[in-house]
Length: 192
Image 1 (tube, rainbow, N blue to C red):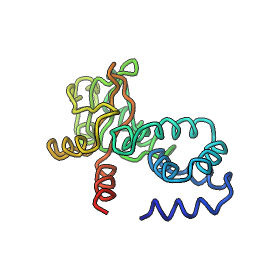
Image 2 (cartoon, rainbow, N blue to C red):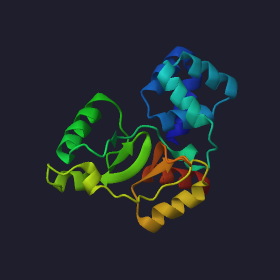
Image 3 (tube, one colour):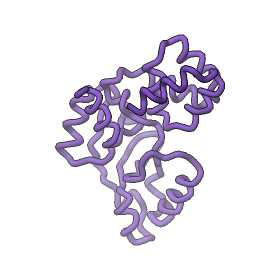
């Protein structure tokens, strides 16, 4: 697989070069690769990573592979409910140019670190510009706890025909998101 090939290439690189490569990847993909390495080698590479990237990857490594936390990424777009839809689209365009964003299917509406809703990209684009995200958001999105088993996550994706799913702590804090491609990748690994 691509992950195995990347892992093999990183093992032969020096730790600093390997860290540079992983910093360019989505955090969930980098965590998958490091999680499959020998612990000592993975830690040496993490030690060479930029502090913020290292913290993100280390946080993701704390979750078991077969849980929602193990499938999620921490790279997602979040906006306050008071933001106008037209402004959110402009911010989305800017963000996609400035940093790596795995998905732009949905924006996650957050108030004081708590998920209050989701808005699809389609809804943002067709909504009159004077409407706030709070007015057009789905106030009851399907969410999952970070410790939920991946099998249940896959069932929810199928049942509700989802492209993304927020991963939310018990207190409502948005921890990350899972994308449909992460679920498919997990299922493919299980079938091997």
